[in-house]
Length: 95
Image (cartoon, rainbow, N blue to C red):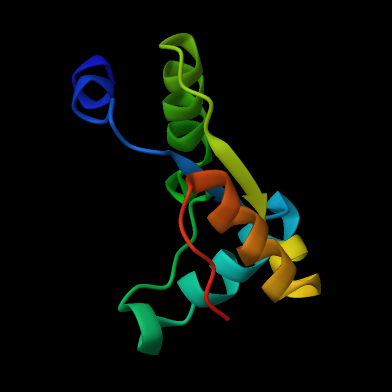
């Protein structure tokens, strides 16, 4: 991750998170659908939670303050959340 972080220094990092229970259940349902994915097994370690956490902690350790957005908040208030996000990254909001 050190090499990755060096290349990402100028970015505004954003993590879109989702309740792990909902995310794993959704991934499970899609993963075991062989017609959809081409396979019929599920391995929760492939969900990427550890890798995302590792990247987040590495960014924090290197002085970055990633933005974290909960997907449920966007679903509950799409326009308001996107407006706040745009403000936090210095991007004009255009509904």
